[in-house]
Image (tube, rainbow, N blue to C red; front, side, top):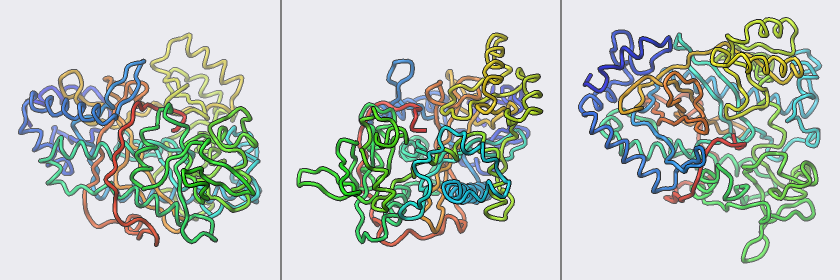
Length: 514
């Protein structure tokens, strides 16, 4: 390798993490061969210039985020995260398996609750979740799908084994940055990209539109699809505009919709137009002031009743948050065995359930060794990394756990895998996670080849969230024969040509839009 990595081996040796790019002896792994060759031919000035150019491109296109009150380009590193065809096959099958199990679980807990009566999951676990909404119990959604889009967060441990860290089946965000990262990296490191047989990601909008149309109310021959956004001030607004533009559908706010006779209509300059599918990008609590928060002006009064009547499909379905509960997460392997009669392909991270007395006692004795998370948290908010916490922070955490054991889980400090990352003018190992995105049309679960790799830019940090100083990498899945999960054909009626619309918007960061 060139001088770019002359100090890398020493820095990597100080970490117990699995290095994604280099094996023993700092030999590049096979999947990184073209990346290593392309970088090896560059000087530090060359690489820095390319990285700066990508940042300027993001700034010009409005791909920015708000960090401590300052608008910055969304951080994209020059070194991609590369996944071999064999590794991706495992991940792809594991993510699809997990989505099918969560889909079955949600249908069950809002129906007969067989998983409870059969003793797989305690009833109190479901009913005590803040995201379990009785308002939507007892009916099947139009189209029969609850988890249209999911983002399953995956990490690689120090042995190189993939593990699921958490599930996101409410309003998972980040796929727009997968698409934008790919556009930038194809120009930022073209030598490696052209030779690496990278599987494309541009199919995602077509797949999403196809799934939304396929799960429309059955009586509708040519469904109208809209993307429902909280508005321009939402931190994920860039993604909302991008996806609406790429799918060729209308981007609407709650004030653009009206419910009448248990049907939803969109106000247009030509009059009202019936809406059949709503891809919602707002939290359930703000969706319908007649059912949830009465002070919300972000949603549309009556939309839940229209869904109950089978006249509109809401994607993702209302109430999915119970499956995102981090305590429910600990039971997903049991769900896979119960609903699918299969063993989990990708295991969970080992987790303590603090509502269990024995587990709680052990965790309270080891607070300084573990990561403790609120079960309803997202974006890294509220978690405490024991080895990095002060004595005062640990005592405050102890009091919170004792006050509400149901509200917390604990996990060992996992050494997330690392990838070389440009920071401080040189390359160093930085920890990464991965969010693969899956689309469920009721018949097949298609997993986008790649996903959003988030990287902790601070040396030694395990916090990858951009709102806390993290960045991202383009995720390259190398070619090969697609597995059955990828080879499923798109549903009839899907848009066959991609639009070239790439709208400019401002300001992105982690938000309630997970």
